[in-house]
Length: 315
Image 1 (tube, helix red, strand yellow):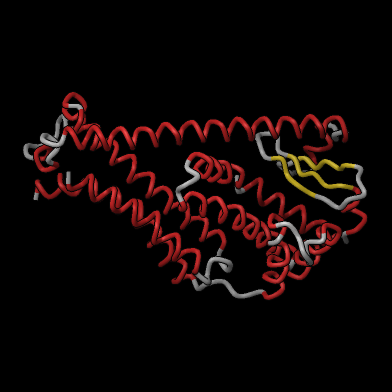
Image 2 (cartoon, one colour; image 1 turned 120 degrees about the horizontal axis):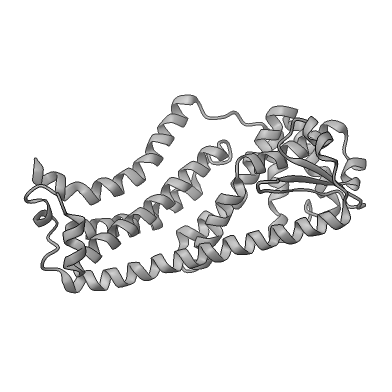
């Protein structure tokens, strides 16, 4: 039972202490892509702790499953886990962890279905409001995403991800922005599509909605929503310049009042503009490599903790 207790304690540590440290880290805004990787490693490590803990708990509660899990294992490995005399604790832990696993699957299924329904509804609205270019003309552009122009006085742009992804821009945006600013806006939206940000957002929202009381999943969702925008901003800035991207972002949001008193959902726009104008340098390559290694150590630690008793019995 030592491995099971260790996994549960590690999951508790990763889900409480580490998110607070990440939230206070000053390098996150300078490296949003790396920050997304760190958050993903953290969440994967927490889920691994739960999944491996469920496997060990179920093995303790069910002798048949325990025989299947340790089939072919060298002599002494099964005894090293001490699962034979822990059926009571195993059943309780397995029940709690299994309920969490079912909740995760249900929440993810709901989120995926809702996202698909939303995309289908928006595609239907686009089909009725904006004609598409013929396939021959659109393919000649050499882009993987179709560009759709909507007639609207309000300057807006967004992307519809999926197998047949689209970049949508209004005539109001085309009139208000310069050519370079419009190119920066489209590059921003193209960054969302090509980085598959919608997959990460769906996963984060599913965890947050499935476990509203778990702080690490709630913080993960909030950080993903912010960091994907910063990552797309950086993509546009690398191609079209920070000042151009900042001006485009400001022009697109002037009519929404986000640079004064604004709703919480729009409050990050001024911060994004300030960040682009500040142009703080990226972390050095060795620093980025160190952070990457530390992030990868979290899921690796969960796996090593699970197999440690078996390895110890063989040494």
